[in-house]
Length: 229
Length: 132
Image 1 (cartoon, rainbow over the protein chains, first blue to last red):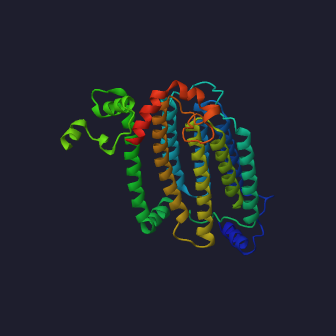
Image 2 (image 1 turned 120 degrees about the vertical axis):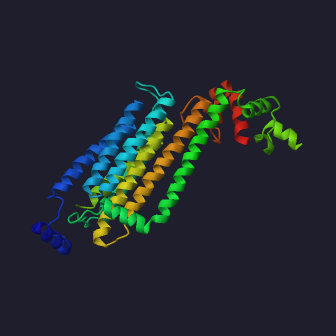
Image 3 (image 1 turned 180 degrees about the horizontal axis):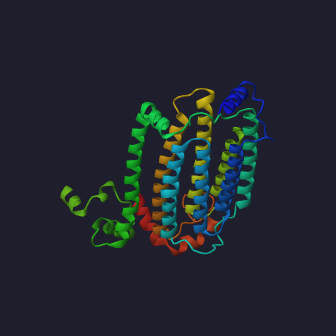
């Protein structure tokens, strides 16, 4: 421990003992997990089986959670596992199922502009990697000492300095919840039961037969419109 | 740990997501690629927060707070996006974004012929929905 701290202080002073040719154990672990993550991401965007893409996305997001753990941000890592791997991928699988995605290989998973997309992506990757490596060539993260992202530290900073954005975020989540329910419910009510829903039936039939743009008062019930007139 | 490792990994993941957004045809696969791009940004935020909390003694932990906010907003985004994709699939019977060119300006004649001929009534009801 004292050796590590001494090495850390020496590295902060002169950045001497670091180097690409003598990586530490954390760097090797980060590199291996990063290769697995990047490979899974490549399979996610190139596979022709849609369900397999979602399952490889699980590997990618789990690998990123391990990278967060290696960066000593453990709370972010568990939030990543809970929200991304736990809920977002399940939502995506439900979406694939509800849009009746084919189970086997679908030949039209990629559009016709994949070579242009590949050119753009490779050019962007080359530019970004070059700029990032050139900018942070002599920068090291000090991972020794207490964790920078433990639950205690993250909670303290979140509820001391970030309370107002946190509460605003809860309102945003509520709005997104209501919006998703409204978006899903309207089409379902129109398609399933026309006699129960007089509003949608009269709207669609009127607009088809008369082909007149419905005014702003057509979202009310017909009985209310009669009463208003 | 050298800062280049997480930064390069984040750049590569972002460009993978960029390729997916540009090259995929199914709307849900495009949403997956958007998730990849958001995760790349999250990795950058966490790495720079861990670096700056030591190097600059930054005590706000703004990178990790922003990462949590990004994760929550991504969850909201994926919910809304899937609801929109399901609504489009229910109306059109497809989630192929190459066929959803109604608001495009120069692509009417070559691609949208077969689709517009077979479903004029569906388009009529959709316009009624859109204006109502």
